[in-house]
Image (cartoon, rainbow, N blue to C red; front, side, top):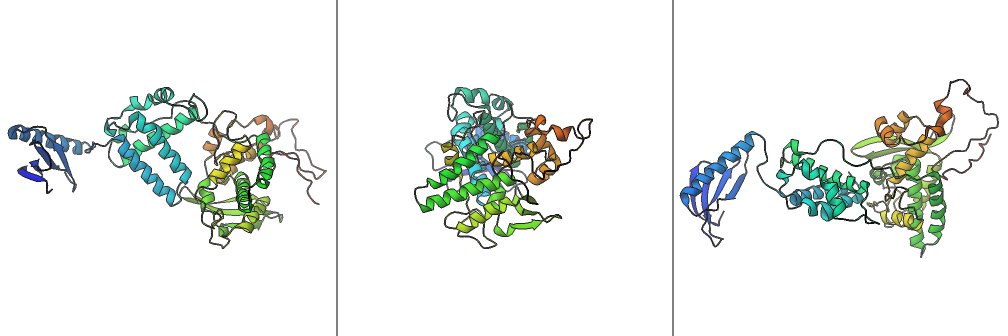
Length: 422
């Protein structure tokens, strides 16, 4: 503290002093935080020594009260804590814990909306009223992506970031745990932006001509990888973070007791490891990618750039362009689709085919409750024979033709299946 020109110790850990790097002669106090190797400095806003001493003792008593009752000691603006939180999420993205796209979304929420709303407010002063008033402020002071009205999904997503920042602040002891907003997010639930069978069939068909329209050979190769990436994602239900971590050594072909082949994948994401399975056609999609990839060693990542480096964005730009060009970027609810929509499409298609919720939850690495909460909209009428199985008039029917019934699948989304070879 070379700038100190005059200092008086009032007691161990508490001094008042003047500064030589300012034009005024007002006093400051410096207090040691109890049980910590940190100090807090406050301007006393007076040039009178007696008054300065009284104020210093008052601030010291307030500091000790806050420490005793586990209250925040240092004041920080919301924008400062939000920046610290965003930097932390970028570090997580760099090591694969979340996608870079997810970090960019969080950072955009902070810079474009949350800082405008509450950035200059001391985070320790933010209460539930500011949380509850956010949807009203957002509707009055912003626009959605494609229209004047801001969707509920957008506001919920931004409020999710808002709450995450407050939880981060509590973990850092910048605020009390009681200041973290509890309970469910307001507004209606965000709809899952899966494709309908008709929409997916359209995407499936459009993508093949979209590849051929590439401007040059490298462009065509990039589109080919993107298309097969989409097929893999929609036929496995992987999370983007799991796809980003997938290596060739994690993919293998196995057979069941009836000698039918399937693909097994060991995936990692959200801090967990698990195995999932997929039909044999997924092996074809992987092989198409391997044929044009510059990274094919067992330890190499499956989804890479043209240089053979891990694809951190998972072809986000190309996926977005394909959805825009095919006029499928927005769902019927008007919400913008992202790479995650392929996972939602997988879940919806499998439920439509009558897959047991328990097994689907295991396959997708989530809970039965999550499946029921978010995919309860799947029409039970489509699964009538499975729901009514065992009731009078719904005895099992023995198949004699050997043909497979029409089904919704993630390869051609509702096309007629070919008869099995006998």
